[in-house]
Image (cartoon, rainbow, N blue to C red; front, side):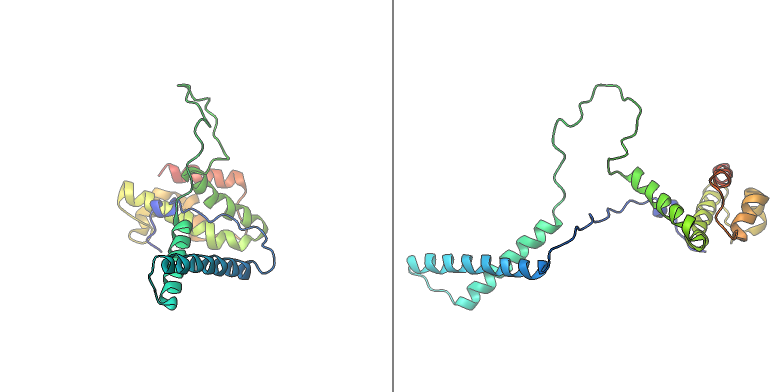
Length: 194
């Protein structure tokens, strides 16, 4: 039994945006473009420095320009996304009560962390036993630990009494195929009643 908490299960981690198909030579084109920019900057710096009467070693100047461009590239990659444009939603004082499913937030990410594996288990039943069932067991253990101070591992007899026969059997002897959505809703309701 792992010691994962509910916070770990529902934690939100931003997923990288899907990368579209790149044209051939995308990486080499990027490297050539960066080298061309570096060469142009070095030429401008050499001409500018010689114009004021200063001489700098060319390898040092090239290394400095490449370092500055590399730092610029890294900071651009690590920069937070720009804020949404102002005026997108006007606060009227009352909310219409509907959920904006298109927005990226922690609630949607938590739902997706359950929705995707549940959807996958429809086509591959072994995924339910290997992915979903351990998460449900961890949630049951965490709820019992928080409310009653026990887990299935620490006190199996008391845990069985708290879970009830149906939920205990479901967690301890996994079904051969995923339960129907109705059965899963009953199991979740029993889990919430712990």
